[in-house]
Image (cartoon, rainbow, N blue to C red; front, side, top):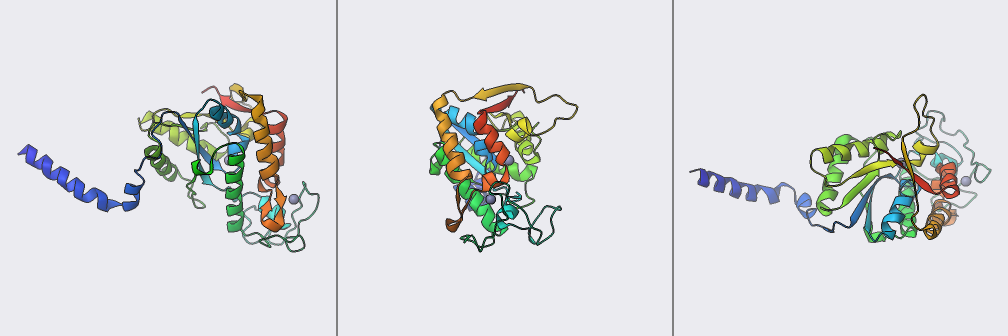
Length: 292
Ligand SMILES: [Zn+2]
Ligand SMILES: [Zn+2]
């Protein structure tokens, strides 16, 4: 009797599962089952160079297959207002009202999208987000990660939540069942960075992820934040295993994140956003690895 019941249950499951969600069934197709795979979970376009660049180049140098998943273009950056020369209705910063002028310190002027012949004219938030994703693709390829290894699972504005992050990681865990997943430490001071680290830590504790690495500290947290009364995050500086790889980071910064060709829709958004962080990375090329 029990056997019949479990047979019925099995048949029921077989009937239910494929109908449940064709898209999730399609996602079950494994892309790479090798254990020599590192999957970097990238919160925003630019993190892959600024904070993951050194570990990514070292993984490539060690012969690992590197994949990346981008979660968000980082469209809330002030760089959009800087290249537009002014704030508008989509501006999120409470420091600016629509129409307020915003000066570019890099180019030492107020940009004018029409006079300067921008491909997009005044750049909307959506166009800005797409241009940031383009920078992510190009910069990653400059580091030597093929385009086919670059994935995006873009979360809509306001959807950077524990559950949405977890469901993305679960998807990629199915696609790369033996990979090492790598991301920021949960002690990172940027909430999006810390959230992905926290989710990955929890998934490891639940036995869902084999071997995460969640001790990378963002360059912003490491070098540009006051840690108040607390001492800095304990850990060590990870340098390039082969200093010849530095030219790849220089190319990613100089060709992509500082690329300026507005007629063709190339706006140097990374450098317009956080110039001091790119300068600091090239001046002293290391990534902080937290001790825990
Ligand atoms: Zn980030
Ligand atoms: Zn500028």
